[in-house]
Amino acid sequence: MAELVRLLVTGATGKVGRALVDRLGGSCEIRALCHNRPLDVPGVECVFGTISDRETVREAMAGVTHVVHLATCKETPDEIMDVAVKGLFWLLEEARESPTFERFVLVGGDAAVGHYVYKHPGPVTETQRHTAYQGCYALSKVLEEVMLEQYQIAYGLGGTCLRAPWIMDRDDFRYSLSFGPDLFGGPVWRELVDGDVPDGAVPLALDADGAPLKRNFVHVSDLVEAIAIALSHPAAGGETFNICMDEPVDYQQVAEHLAKTRGLPAVTVPTPYHSTWLDNTKAKLLLDWRPRYDTERLVEDAWTYQRSPEDPRRVWYPG
View (cartoon, one colour):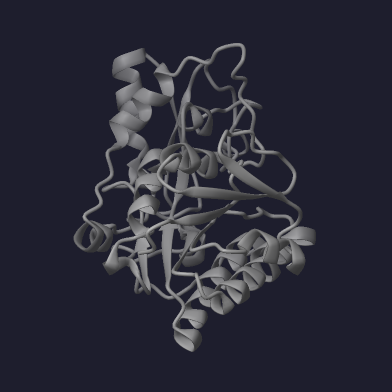
């Protein structure tokens, strides 16, 4: 690895990007490609513009040795191809032409393999074929992974894909279980049940087979550690890794824990979704990475987190 790492982070103002900047600050030179929001962090250089503009990307990539690509869109058809395809294409083009470039780390998502939309007969490993579900977001995750893979094949580009499920931070998980308008992400639990819902109730989600739903998560701090490792680890080059908790969250386990520790009621919620188990064995074996969060810690951190008046809950996009 280069003696001096010059790192470009896209999506640096987001949940993962800001945590990564904080984690790596002081250990390398960091440049952020910013679009809608500035990043006011001492020592971090910012380039402002849209990732879909080649000249902006060329400026951001000048002299860079490593890239962590986090910029993404959700279900926004008017914007998503500019970010996921055009933006990534310009980044990869600049990377392959650069004499200083070493490694490109793409943070992908389990949407590329359908996460809980499709039924998987066994653990979902990195060999699972791409299976995007309906909408543009999952398709964009597939296209990102394929583009990076093909640049690795065609040009020998140094690249790594870290495939993450739903990323949690602070009190995110608590609000992902809300029946109210403050719900974070989906499903929209209130639309899946009839009748009244008790105050403070949490969903005991059932999968399409009627068993407690199991869904994959990762805490932002565990993902950031995996990124930090992947930037330089020899075994990371050219590989894809599932970066997630050792076991998926079991909604029955969550409901039982909250009933025991906080007396919260649970409401059974049938869903059309499928329980999945994202397998992180490869990352643990090859990168010597270990997640610190399990279900209980995820729940406890979310329920004990206290926000100050200067730290309002702000969701830039729902997921």
